[in-house]
Amino acid sequence: MKTARRPIWIWFALAWLVLGVLYAYPMRAAVSRAITPWESVARGMTHVTPVALVAGAIWWLTGVVTWPPRRHWRFFAVHLVAAAAYGFVWLAIDTSIIAFGTGYSVAFEIVRVFAGFQVLDGVMIYASIAAVSYVVRIARQLREQEARAARAETLRMRAELAAIRARLNPHFLFNTLHTLTALVRRDPETAEQALERFGDMLRYVLDVKRSAREDVTLADEMQFVRSYLSLEKLRLGDRLNAVEHVDPDALDCRIPSLTLQPLVENAIKYGIAPRAGGGRLEIGASFEDDALVLQVRDDGPGASSTVAEDAGGMGLRAVRQALETRFAGHARFNVVTAPGEGFAVIIALPVPSGAGETAAAPV
Amino acid sequence: MKTRAVVVEDEPIARQQLRELLLEIDWIDCVGEAADGRSAAAMIDQLEPDLVFLDIEMPEMSGLDVLRSIQHEPAVVFTTAYDKFAVAAFELEAIDYLLKPFGRERLRAALERVRRAVHDETDVPVAKRAHEALDQLSGDGTLTRLFVRDRGRILPVAVREIERLEADDDYVAVHLRGRRFLVYLGMSEFEARLDPTRFLRIHRSHIVNLDHVAAMVPFDATRLQIEMKDGTKLIASRTRSRELRSLAI
Image 1 (spheres, chains in turn purple, yellow):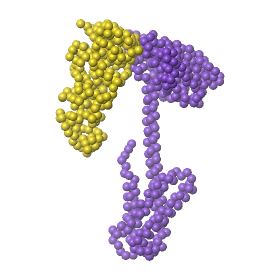
Image 2 (cartoon, rainbow over the protein chains, first blue to last red):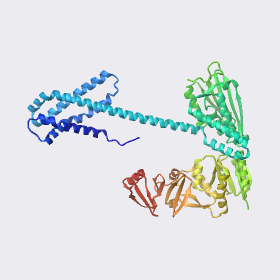
Image 3 (cartoon, rainbow over the protein chains, first blue to last red):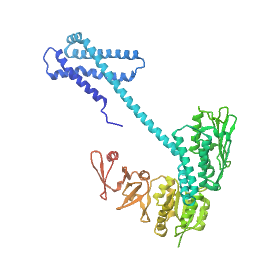
Image 4 (spheres, rainbow over the protein chains, first blue to last red):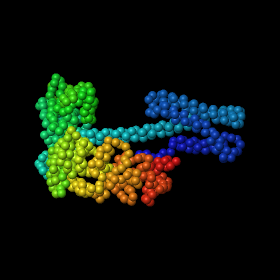
């Protein structure tokens, strides 16, 4: 929320104006002859103006020596010295002005009588200005912190939304809905089943997003992949031929959610759907040494190895990045492909010894 | 005589659904179906149907490629699940399309439009408009001409003759010569395709053609009122008013 605020120097100037007027009374008392109220106010203003101009330095100093103090003795020492200096500077300027206006002897007399008061006065004013400066600075910091927090929250929500949208591929979504529309009258039973699967899929995607970065068992991920495949099979018919080679022991391994499905989606999008004759999709899970090896392979047009480096769409890249942040170099992500040779993604995830229980240990 | 139609759709269930729905339409005779772009193109040139239902996303050859490659010029209804750019181009060329998912109701609405078009020889041929639509997809230059629907007829409109555009829910109303035509397109998408030296966005829901502006006068302390030559008065938003003022200097 933004409200129009007056710049701080206006308040600052106003405060000095008040102080200047207040000084009018002692100014009048200090002079032996009678002077008009206006003249005494003018003298009050002359008294405070030079030192008001110097006061900007205090604001600057509160920016350099920040609150809360890191070392207390240093904080108070700096301000004590600065306050004293401020008082003396004031005395020096005031005395110079009087000396210039009324002569040295008067100035000397005033210094003799008032020096102590004026320096003390300066220290008090210094303390007030420094205190107000700190309050203003802290208030600003708090406001900025609040704004930053609000911005971060907005960014986080936007990222979450983008993630959900990326998972729910609109092509898949609308095409599937169209298939379901087509099935409703002709084959209500299949339509019903398909809607159940569709519901399962949506639940998985939305749930997983809510508790991001949570691991699921390979069995859960495979269940999700099967729902997805059954819907794609409805659309693509005989063109999609999918086979699974999954080691039953691997099903209990825990893997990051949405590791397999994007690979399957990618294989269908690039390896199978573009071909009129369709193609074969293989999903594999097995153990090799100390690793859980997941494979998704299609017999589609493939790609040259240079293209394969940044091959695939957003889906592949997202999986690769997720694995990198999650396993920090302990997971392998390989693409095996050549033109006309199909496209395979092979992922190896670390499994702690005693394989088959809780693989893919968290970092 | 019945209208002879061909269905081009790669997904078997969707293809069968469309064919079955067409069976219920008495003035349409479905003479063929194709499951991919290549065989579709061959079939269209061989059977020379009056009407083609053309899926955009297909293996081997997209629906748009099919249209590019055929000699015969049938009426076309595109079907698509999700293709914002194509849909925008179709809107600007008044080309019929069906957004998936669709069932009886939407199909019938689209067919009503097609029926009038197929029997109205005065229209600009669909194929010609379709080719324009394809060019629109590739280029992002400024729009010089678009098509609008007027009681089942398709009328070409020269963009510089458009007096102003007005947002109307999800539509944009195109105003010219005292008439008003609806195009199903977002204001910003429209604005992006207009010549910025001629068309000015003065409000979230108003774009005016400067050639048809009679005067701009202050409305209140911060806003300007735009008076059109046809007497319409529009009030520019605060932000836009500020920009307009800086333009005037």
